[in-house]
Every structure is written in structure tokens, then in C-alpha cells.
Image (cartoon, rainbow, N blue to C red; front, top):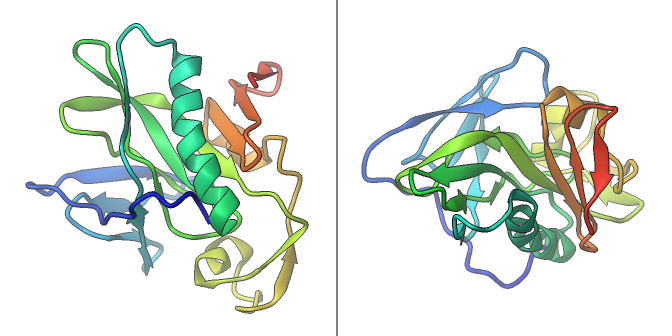
Length: 194
């Protein structure tokens, strides 16, 4: 679904527990950086790391989000799955992001995973694939619930607007697989960047 970038597994020299900021109100999950899965509500979800993205300290936040967004948009255009990342900063002000996907069509839990020697900001970026419908897979069932059936066709919501869950997750960026980049910091603070 994304570009032909190399898909890697989460790898770390030391275990690091990462909190997930999920679309479920009050839900939390953990991801050890050495694992290739996310544990959510007694479920194990495979996760795939995409290529890390970095930027110089003098790069604006919007320009760095655009750079990360290109990676996410290319992946979503190819696969029709969402991908996401938390924006990170180094002590020198440099930017970084460690995008990943659980290969769901309708959501991506943002993980506070950063490139080495960087810390997570409170802002994320995720992709919205286009298309009017998709075939439900195992990852989609987490959002859709137990009555959804794997392989069933599900209508996709509007892709160039933030969802209620996006607003609930806090400030951040969203990019469509067509390259439209948006930012929100609440309902009254939304803008299209490109």
C-alpha cells in the first residue's frame, strides 16, 4: 500500500516500554521496542516499522511533517492501510519520526517510539487512505467490533477531514494518500498545509 520502501521490524538493543495513544477513550497499551507486536485489550497485533525519517533543527515543524507525510502517503497509496508516527526532537533540536503500521484500513494507534536519542513531542501524524470502501481485515476488527466480519466490505469515511477520534487523540497532522496535508489542534484550529 505504501511506496516500495523497505519494511522493517521494531528492533532495539534494550527493551523500552512505549505508551500508545489510541483512539479508544481511556484505553492504553504497551509496546516493547524489541517486539514486533502491539498488545491491546488482550489482543496481539502485528506491527511493521517503516523507514525512520529525520530532519535538521532549522526545519519548520510543518516542513518536517510534510517530509514524514510523504512516507505515510506513499505507503497508504500502495496498500490502502493507515500508517502513523509521533513527531520527535533531539537535544540539538533536530527532528525525527519512526513511522509504523498495523495494516488496518481505518486507524493507526500512535506509538511514542522515536529514533535513538530523541524524545516524543505531543504531536503525531497519520495517513488517511482514499477509496470508497475496503475489505475488513483482522486489524480493522479492533475498531469495528466483534460483529464485523473479516473480508466484508466496509464504507470508508471522509478522508480529507479529521475524525472525532483524531481530535480526541490531541493535536497533530493527517495526510491523504494523494498528498493533502492538514493540521489540527482542536475543532477551532484546523488548517490545510498542502
